[in-house]
Length: 495
Image (cartoon, rainbow, N blue to C red):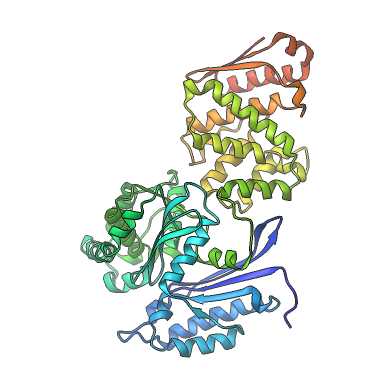
């Protein structure tokens, strides 16, 4: 029996994988409570007449049986199940959908390519920060969606009949990773993209985000290989060359590429290369959500905030009862410090946003205990779902927060990939000073200070009378002079 529940579920019957996402609303944000993904490869079960094989249908039904157990106590009105490209074209789709209904106990909606693109865009818009004017790319198993939009409004939507499973079966059917196979796959993809190219270019975009398994795989490869998180044409071409060197699909080995993703990675890569070339894309980042998130946000009404990061920071602060006044004090002090050194260091607006995020979240861990507050805060930042922050950005903010006081852990800063190491260290140094200056939590006792920077050296001058009347913070600053010098960060204190 289905009773009242705070849970909502989205089911995505894709051409390559079936997905289930279950969430509940908490403190104005969404908390994932279950996520199941299975490689069903439905598209691989289509024959020349677009008829699904019994084997492919059975793989899908077996997967849905797993989903059904998770849905038993969620009201039907709070579940939405959709099917995409393969079931749009399968001639015996109705037979499968009828059997799937019996397994799930709810209807499955076969959505059009345009609606799929709309839902993908909504999922991205609700979970991804950056410029409001964006191009969204989603390479699925049987179709590829290209969407431009501003804010939460899509301005052009296209669903193209090409995907990593169909391109695998069509252009890599011999399982050889030759330059000829890649060239054929890319040329066919470029021909599809050329049909919509003029409209997309006319709409324009400031950022490009990818919301597919192919892009996720690229992100995992770059993290494993110590690269930054931005996907560029040069990186794609390097991975193509590496795949060609491997020779065969069964022998494809790239550091960071999982076995689960390896089968359709070359075909997805060929489509992404075609998109980069045809649309003259210079860089792409990973989106925070896609189709499933679009389905969820369509059922749950949350306040729409153009700044996804701001909404995330506010709801996270509320959830962990963060002292908002203290967070604001540290943020404001960081801003003053940045302003004083920026003629020398030239920290970008992006850097300053990440520093502000660290200020907002640096005391999360106090909800657990004081003794290990910084470590707890860093752990929470790394582990929490934070819409609007990429994995690399979370890693950087966590590293800054973990180093807010005490001994400096240089490896944590070098292991992040959101910023060059020098800039990450600069943000950390400014943040540590801001935390010390705000350590009494009193706005009326802020120091009169001036910070200057010359290359890697910082010089902090404190008002002498303030130093006399605030011996504890003076002691902390003297300790900081020693700690920064110990790791070869030049720092002098005068008053």
